[in-house]
Length: 151
Image 1 (cartoon, one colour):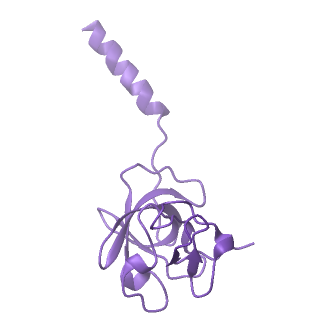
Image 2 (cartoon, one colour):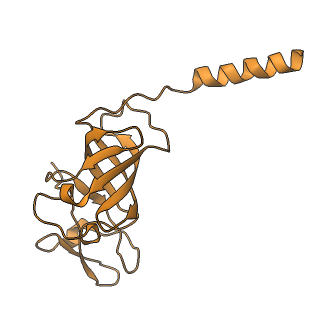
Image 3 (cartoon, rainbow, N blue to C red):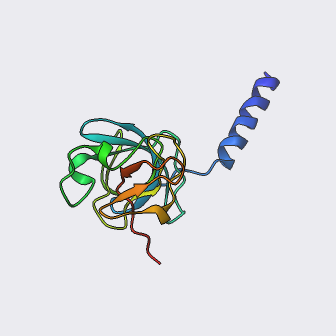
């Protein structure tokens, strides 16, 4: 019995030291990794919030529907994102199972992209026109919805 009490006390000490998850609010800007790309949406593993006050669980997921990717018409999410890209997105709605995200503002989108062919990290210096970028490793040109960096 004393051994069980010791284990309970140890468990309670661990719980006290874990930071409590703060709620993400509508309008917060989050960053995360593109995990899944479907015909009409992408699934993002939300890793953090830009104000650095939020502690997120690894299970936080966000969804960006194709109509919320850009202000112009996008036929398919594959035209803007690739699996493994790190993106900035804004929370537009919160449901019990995921965050509804949007990237249809200039300052939102890919902040770290990877070549779809050779998987190398893309260098923003290789940006061409109309959202196209050329991989400096293999020369492949592809389209990404890059976030406009504010200086």
